[in-house]
Length: 380
Image 1 (cartoon, helix red, strand yellow):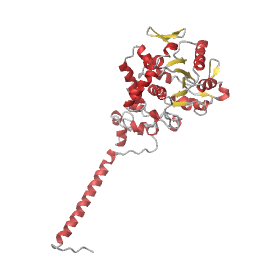
Image 2: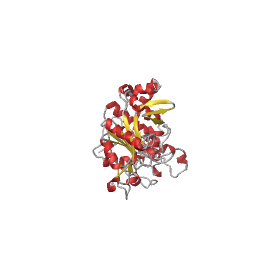
Image 3: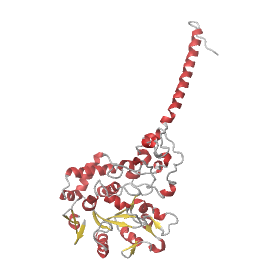
Image 4: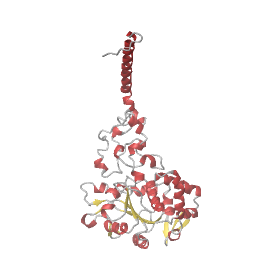
């Protein structure tokens, strides 16, 4: 993607953000040759990600047919750029569709062609012209110690930049665990005084999408929810959308039947590991982690850590490296049904119970046999 005089080109096609911003999302996609069929498939995928009934897909499509493309600015602070990498590898929709079709990404240091004063001018223009209307995405934690001197860009500290940009946004989405909770930079002893976006800018409307990295499908769904319903999605106590973080990984895990059956991997590479048994004993933190990884997955929905044979590390939970550690030590007792393990006991119980029933039945029959016909006397 290249950018000249306010326009960008992709695959030889010109993209002018100021003009296309006037189109609705649906109209802009049609202008770019996206078929109605593919548009509806995208709406269905987003509807599923939002945990809405399939009947909502036409309503999502109808809303996107009318809603104007929102301006978006993406800020990177103390981070590893993992969330940007997740965005660039998004498949539903593709990163190119997110950047150039669905959203008007006015500022993103990693993918924008402009640099230096031109880049900063683009940011200033967006947050000034669209104050209260743009969406801000923040990746990385924000250093607060010593006035925020441990992180600067364009001559401004991360702290000042966050307060200015997030403070004027319609909504701020904190992507990744660092932005949502402070992450690894905030781990003790926390030399830079790193904090989450919400701690740095308490007055901002912040939606947390923790995870290492964020699932780009959840990011897209969050933005679409805001566009379609005109408000942020319902959040849990940690500011996370319930549609993505409302259920434990353990409850939707493909290995859950093995947990309930008492079938566990006892060591890496054993027969249970090869058969896809539960990873609880190997330190899986799924029973205490809330995220929709089992349903949304990564890499074009082909896999996720547990599906690949490694236990969940709990990366969508605060301070997971401490609260969920050690990584390969199992959690305190988490009880399942143990169906297979209990089968013999249940069988023995049934056998004993049946024998006792027959014994009682035999005794009653013997007593009745000793009685004379017509005798109605009872014992005691």
